[in-house]
Image (cartoon, rainbow, N blue to C red; front, side, top):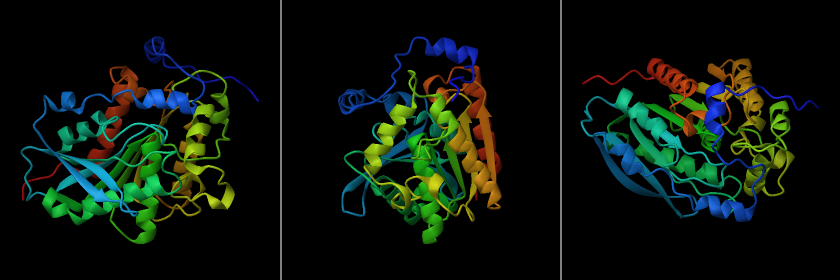
Length: 322
């Protein structure tokens, strides 16, 4: 098996040079990483006119799931705004509902969207379908409170990055199979979709330090699944093993050419097309995992973010006063 890898974008390579990289995760290191704070959300809201509220909804087992709701302060509640439901990244083992929140807040700015972010429980403390079930419960709450939120029930987008992208895909499959709620589109940013970890791109990023490596991916999936394998693994948890990808809302999928998830992400788009669905796929040449979240100032990051926003603009035009 070749160890050749696509070259990094030159600007990203220079920026990445100052970042400490790892090859693998273990429980001790995870404990240290979990103590690192997210970017304070207050700093992201300081220059925006945004109303924020915190909500708690019950999980299927009765545990409390925190939701943060960000609404434009001048929201015209007669206009039925779009909603972006955000699931954060972190390999399913770390992060919180404010991780990468700057990404959907750009859509609040652009479209007047209400942004809701979910604090799903993390592995290994939570396992199996618990994480995606938590996310689905949050989606049910949004749909049930659409009038109160000032959103159009038919204009809900599920979105997420990395693990959150995989959870967004799983929630979309779950909503299709259960018949509700309606989802207008799914925004899957470098999504974590396949627990099997056997693709060419997965093997290309094994045994070398990186932002997210094959070994780190194995740690994350084992934390969620334990010893489950084969037919025991739900397609809601690992969407790549879902047998039927028909009847899904339009998908936007992007990934980097220089990352673990490249092949599973491109394959997921291909399977949506094969099932008669609509997917827009972008593979950013020289992009490593999560490049635009880590270095939004890079040229390739700005282009990737703008391209996502343009796609959302076609799917969800800005609301007009009613």
